[in-house]
Length: 204
Image 1 (tube, rainbow, N blue to C red):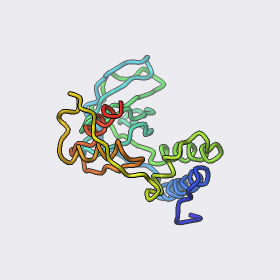
Image 2: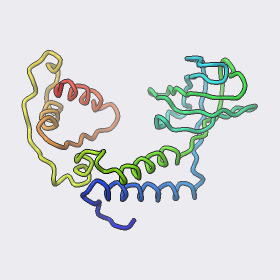
Image 3: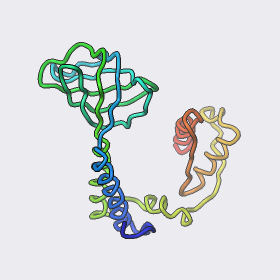
Image 4: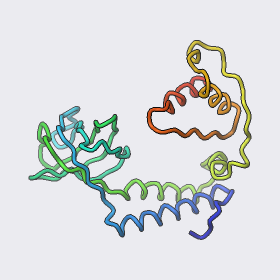
């Protein structure tokens, strides 16, 4: 990296971030750039046409795989292009594409994911922003320079949709509504998505 400190202007900040992402891609490519996951009990969810469909699988080890990640679905006899649509617990939905008509199910397969594909998309997007910084708001720079953020608190509106918000979550949402930047961290199952939904309700 050319500098350890993120720039404060959007254009240079985007270029700085893209440089870091490209470094990560290079490191991953040296290690092979792919990860393999065993997937089981693939069943047809939606047929798009004879050569592409959405299948739902069980991820054998429960690993979380990023949405929009792309790779290959490999069976003992064939290989298919695939993209992750979404994952809920151990269940993952994959968009599967093949040259021949797809089978009605996949009892067992190996999902081979390209670890660099999403990072390449991110780097391309950041480099595009670097050349057109006016397309991005000032909040992006604030994330990297939180000391410049305005921090405050406002009471949530008194509506039935927010009646169940109490305690620590209430304080977090009141700060989020009154501040230009708020970070919310928590492990899985601690209510982050619940909180975000209620923050949207409060802002609307």
